[in-house]
Image (cartoon, rainbow, N blue to C red):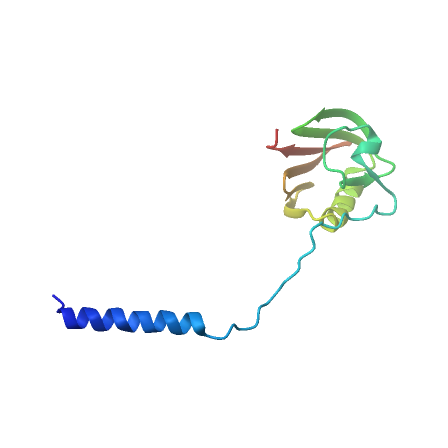
Length: 142
């Protein structure tokens, strides 16, 4: 148990420390400015965005080769899927490996003719089977 003298000394010391902190000269103020808008990647040579392929949904900056031939598609707010016959799956895999990171997507898996990638709010998957390849983009947004 503390006596009244110890309590008074502690309270007095705390008061002096607080007053000294309040009267101290202000230090330099650091100001940092960060850009408010994220730069949108420019259209890659030979690339076409989903919108120019007739899609109303999906990311604006996901590019595919201009010679892409879409044979089946799903175009929903939370799911965009393309089944493609051209170019070859190998060519599409190479294209995506090169252009997804340039558009800010992180490739999280790459093997056996398949890719997984993401950039908020989209998650994507690409796979090749025989003469077709498929690209699927999903988001949880509503």
